[in-house]
Length: 148
Image (cartoon, rainbow, N blue to C red; front, top):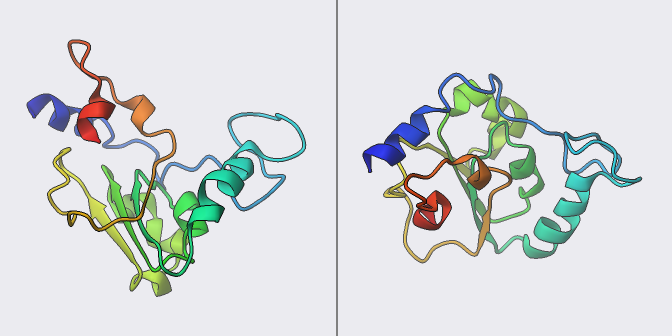
């Protein structure tokens, strides 16, 4: 697990204010994917991968929320748990999500890949956007497979 712990440490000092690609709820908003037609690609992802699956009965686990752009789109859920290598304060998570949502959203700053703070058999929906692609792996070990 030492390698995995070192992997977490690489995020310290990155993305001050929280990683933010754009607003997934904006149909014509910009993203780092540049212009790929009239509709924002992240809005299309929201429409297909989140909106149909989130309702007042859904319990969500989000890995790597950053500032909380995707989290905000999932607020209709009953409960949301977020895990990030960076603190909520550093990401300015609550400023973006709104402190009024603290009753339904939990934010965990992780120190390793153990997921020890998560309850078993609890979540209905798992979401992570772009976070598994930035892990490095070791000796051809797929860190994403290990993590999930």
